[in-house]
Image (cartoon, rainbow, N blue to C red; front, side, top):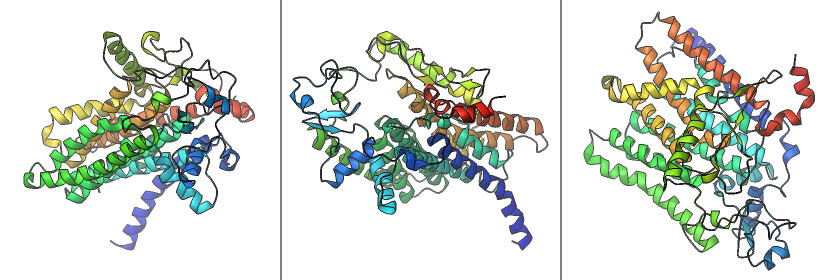
Length: 482
């Protein structure tokens, strides 16, 4: 390649590099509620993950959070009325006189410990969540870039970068970061990297690539056990990759299974060491507004729960944002849950949610294209398309699994939104490539929808859950209001 060619190629990459910088900066901006100062959130006494890290350093699996002696004296500490006026670690798991984090310890191992070793200080949850979001974004971007190959995108690639990074619920969710958001963003990072490994396997099948797909799937499940549903599309990817190499399929499947067995065994040991039960993740011992003994958080075992799936699925897919006359002009609506099969508190308080279709309409186009490529246009189903179909199927399985649970909230949607966006970008680009080069209108339409999602996602961030960002920055909001 000539010097002029290298210069032209580098120049074409500048808009994408700027878009990546904008996305990462946006994550930092919303995670710090407009200050870009993570230090103001650095308090190890309120971070459950830091408490757990300190527990690990002391040689045990529970948090160093002190236990009030009155909790120890209660005959049933899981009765919320009995704990009235007693200070305790809310939403932790209490067992045998200690507080445990019922979320996975994976964020401690992947973020908190490395940051503490590098900076010699404990990171705030906001920094960990922003880093995991950036990880997920970069992995998803590499998935799209790799699947598109050397072909020049029909839609400018910097638009796809902005769409992947900001055209979703991430800015909205980052306004309030606690242990819940850290766990979910960690799972999002693992699933986005899993998607990248799916593309790598389908592009050039090998035992090593099957192994790495197993690694990232195992870590995704470790971060969020509900992500076990991705095992189904992962198995399909293995079959696709080795369909013409069936003699190697068994060895590839074994390579894929090794990290799943190792990580699964570690998870079972971790649960048994904490709660004397390898299959107990801590929900039974959770200190929350109800006694969790015998509660069914998720599942479909009755007609009422079937209706719950329908209602929750409608929320995740179709619930629109609401328009406001003042900046930021858009806010998320509260979910409407069926009290018969929802959080059993008798409370009418629910959390906000943004439906995927009104926020990211391109994902609906991408889903339709996935079905067309899979069942109608089979001749066009090359490796990039197959990878996108696998990832899209995984995202819908995650959404379906979440819809079986008794509580829905915007942060849960991060588990499938990034995957759907990445798969949609690949499928839409492949569909556009089938059109004549001069077909400008479809390309403009796609670009307009992508930028619409970016604008809505960005504006939603200026509210945040319960207007957390807006409340923390009244002067900024006043300046931005005409």
